[in-house]
Length: 113
Ligand SMILES: [Zn+2]
Image 1 (cartoon, helix red, strand yellow):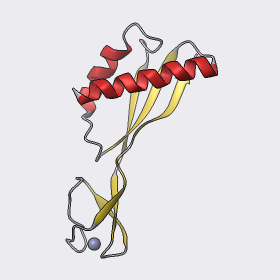
Image 2 (cartoon, protein in one colour):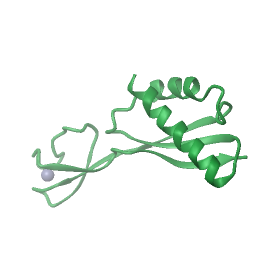
Image 3 (tube, protein in one colour):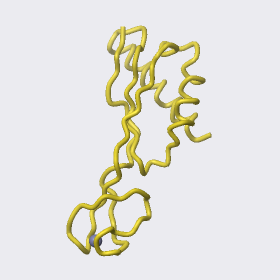
Image 4 (tube, protein in one colour):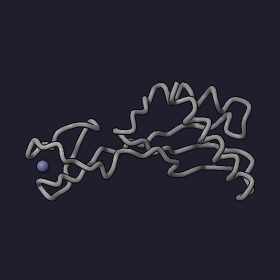
């Protein structure tokens, strides 16, 4: 499962930060997940619990912030909303879109002890 390795990546960051910032327990993790990132929220929650078991984030709550997809349409010369990666432009129907938001998976904020 793709989400499992994403959670392992998150744990790695938490551990690195714990060393550099001097905390020993993570209470809440806010994750920003773009709607074009292909990440399944349910799978993410499931993997998070499994991966964090026995770690500094074993008790951590996972808060997910969805980031809507956005792209730049070359033909319209403006930003448009997209819900799927290979969507056509909602305004002109063209496919010359460059995704500008909605791709992300990143830690937005942490609550630590
Ligand atoms: Zn367009």
